[in-house]
View (cartoon, one colour):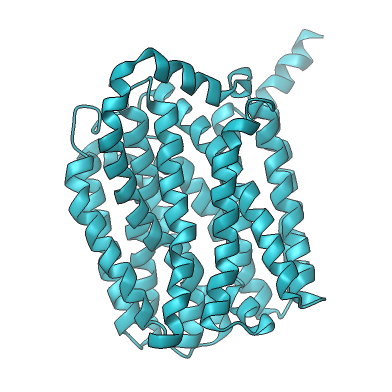
Length: 405
């Protein structure tokens, strides 16, 4: 009886693999509807203001999710939440497909994206805190690779969006396929979650924060770090929300071209995140963020000013590569400040990051009707410059260069 049990144990995923899968399915869910934004925009007949309002539903839902998950985690174990929340994302996608392909109901689309945002916000905190704890236990930079799996899921979702749009497959069938994949990934991930993933992170964070009065002195620097991450995340979110639409409505290309540009963006971001851990360990947080941020800045400018599809594609790829490390490296810096502040810091930075990523870009829609696309994306350039100015200040310090300290 012992040998079969040992064999089954070896076949189960490790806890790190399980968290990788959860990041992947979160990215897959997000990119599946984001990759079809130009189609959604066309079917539901949004103006720039209308599309911005639609995206704002996701934002509001996510911010609510980020705020309520500490309370929820007091009553529901982390391991169970990391299984239930992905299933919620899986159910939202077909419902959004019904709103687009069958009823063409703007209100149903708004409501579905709002609920999807709540679930996404809850899952974001749970998976990032779990990932940060694994990173601290290993003693080297892992958050970029965790977010690399998010981007890998986004790449898969964007690729499926590009393929299904090219094949003229209705949104409901595309989303049903993605929903099935998410359920399968969630089941596999659940098998590998160990007992420490079953702990209540909110209670741990509260106890540790109370045990270290010096942690409050670091909150000022943490807020500056949050502002830097917010700026870099805004740039990433703007691409998620607007790169496909700007390609079609701004540069006059086809819907499949818009999906392709989004795919190039996500592909470059995925590459940057998987290589990011090596860069951080070799160059440190500050120089890595400055180099990648500059690449992203040049990419956004190239995307805006160019009309040649090949240069637009190059700008999309540079935009993705340059945006790849702001959020994960910012969370690594937060988690490494102190062992006591770490879990709470990850929650704070995650709120800054996703608040800006999901809350800021929809506001671009409010100026699109006045200045048009892609000109409205100059907002990203200005915000990215501010983040680069903040980078040297928030990425220095004894704990900012090494996760193991």
